[in-house]
Image 1: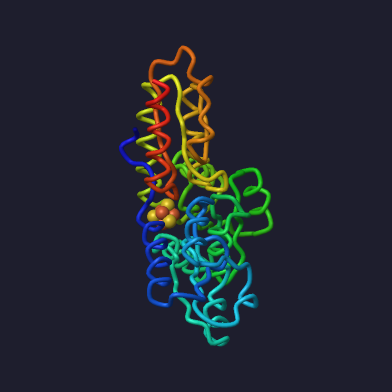
Image 2 (image 1 turned 90 degrees about the horizontal axis):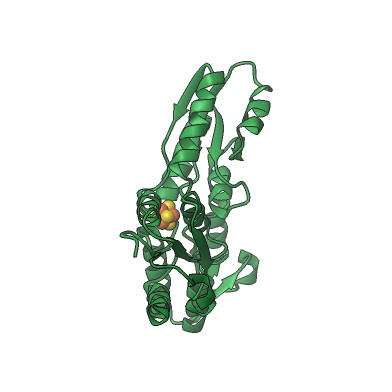
Length: 278
Ligand code: SF4
């Protein structure tokens, strides 16, 4: 088992806020989008009475919880309050930090690049809070083309919190080669780095890795990619039911890790299933 795996600080905090809200408001508790990127946890929240909605207009009264990845713009909280709803902001403090640095770089006149996936809710929330144009990409060629539009190449670089340090530093180094000035804020969160380092460490000593977490979870997908770099068999699963005995023919040692949005109970079920196979 990787030394660091499963629920991170931000996800634990958001899930606790949601269950607490059900405890104190008993009904009419909603999340705007899925609270975290784990379908099984979202399912348990639904069983407890937390309803997922896609827009504020779907809620007539009660509580709206803003998810750990943040919301698309600061206006969302104002709109919720104007509609008479109680807004509970479960945005992870690390995401709030990235939003703040993005805004600072825009205000200081830098052309801002965020190294990440432009379709991910977290990057959308950072872009929405920045108050100016931001290029979100993992492709340096795209950055180079984009920068050609500007006479002065003063660039600010931040990262999606779940980005690998390798990719982030690669892009920063490439920017340094073509820009007059580069200002960098390392917005990768420590929970992500810890899980990535622990996954790499364990993957070097096994023949197969099982990576547990939502298929829609960026940090779980990155963990699987890091393990694949070790040229071993890697299986990204969401639940123990997906474990296939056939994967482990001739395998002596299997490593297990899990993304930051994967709860302990799912990890334990996977470990139990693997131990039964052994
Ligand atoms: S992975 Fe990091 S940034 Fe994302 S929710 Fe967890 S602690 Fe926050």
